[in-house]
Length: 249
Image (cartoon, rainbow, N blue to C red; front, side):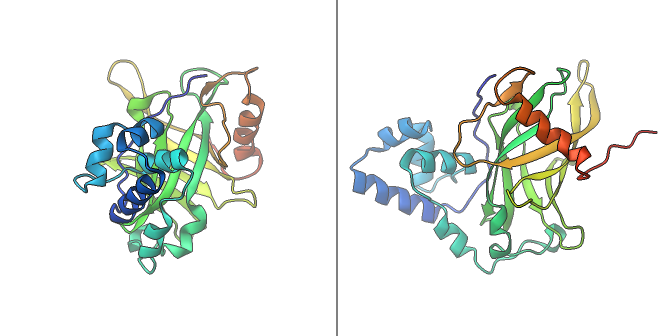
């Protein structure tokens, strides 16, 4: 099992986060260099974000929250109160989808290794600049393929959609509404890297499990390794539990 971290550019409103960070630095008598080391963020990146010359990414905010043990985002959510997502995302408000915000363990079958489970993290948070929920993947073993995008929550279907559009190339996850424990089960449709430059459409079961700060195995999980039986059980539940169907001719 490997543990990979990769920041991604899901941009959130800066002012409230920067103000809170400056306050915490002053109160703790901590230097920016110390905070950069503690949160595993480059000092230059931190300086630019604090000075307003570049936005904080969602991953950076999560790392800073973990390093300081504080929540940097309530002010941002409050400022977004009353804001609505576009109609093609479901026209939801920030308050109406707050229950979806958080960090999740994402599980899907490995494309390369039979029976293996691919595990990484997905964080969902309100993007004040885009006026919608945004998601960001981190800790992917295949870091160059890390995804970020927006979240649709339409009332009609009763499902949650995570979709990426990069220059017209789409990737889509369709998930049922969270169960009582917050778990979401569904399907992921994406492109698998084939021989050479070939890309092959593929759909696989997908499970999102809420994370509560626990240290969980990430990367490619093989039979017999820690967490495998639990991970495989979640993926088996996608089909056996009736959350999705895979139909072949």
